Length: 511
Image (cartoon, rainbow, N blue to C red; front, side, top):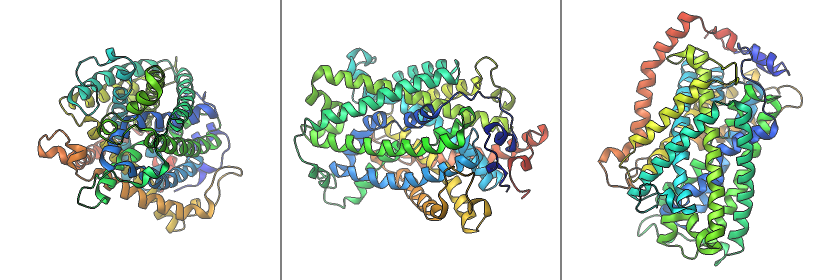
């Protein structure tokens, strides 16, 4: 492994050290970089989407899943922030993993991340069901109950989600600058919306903050630990995607300074804002029963803020959802482009082609969009579509994260010189905190991944379908691993036959 990637302040020169030439256009500034990460995390979107799910499983005390998950994921974010200084390149998770471990592990990290991102596009797009029908009943296109957990609500979510994905794919064709402009508008709207929502909630409270110490009796006669662990899905789903800023490193000006700041800031802002929204919702809800468990924050808004203000708030949420879908689709396309550029995907030449007009890889955006819609169509007829898709997105992305943090921890324990000295002066580094932070990132990441992926009927089979649905996440991961194990040697031979990039040019040892 070489430490040369840390030695050049110029981003273009640093990219050449990694074995690539500058093809994408560097048009993103600091706020646009922050916006890409914040849009992906999108607390307004994801908390709206899954609050009812988390509350229904864990009762009011599920609030405590938020700070617990934040601790673990912020440590992951800090590790990624340091890696974004050393390796500012598109396809961050894939590129980082292959540099701190081996080529096979790096490929699998990219493979899992690509799948996770595509599933995340599907998951965020169906969040429109939690907002748009509340703005106007006409958005409930298929008719019937609009609750996301009902059969008609789940079907309508697929319809709305498919439309959102198509529009996002069309916008991506216009280049990173226009996409960034729309993302900035979306993030500015979301920040305003979060502040407005917090004000509405805390000016309409009906109970004190002590509500977060109650369980609502969801545990029945058993232990509360099990429903609490199941309710952790909401927080784990919200707190990933902060690496999106690093995915766009090749399109960011001064990425070694910009990306680390964007990664850490988006996590801190999201943690504070999301925590206040959760607490305010529990304090302002007229009741803590079935209405809140079925309709979530939309129910509280409509009841406490009135129909007009409630609809305005839901419209803001819809803008945030759209912005998030744009950011996630862009990140997925960059991972696909990065892997294809190394000859590690079928049709690599076409997938790694950069448009001379827009300076972006167009075909990956199309493939990501079509595949995401395909995932939604596979979920037709499932009332648990929200739980199925969001849970799988969490599990597979957290697995990809582990393929970075775990090998890096091993490198630190071995005392590798690259991770025992600072990068360029003035750039982000964990210094002596690198080892303990990395250790917490690995432990929390593994525990959270296992928790969400654990077979539970209440998450994966709420509609009482066939028994394999309960094992949806483990079976999905197993299938993705088997396909990857078959594909990797084929892709490696393809890359070797085309002499795409020599391993030594990637900063790797011959081993």
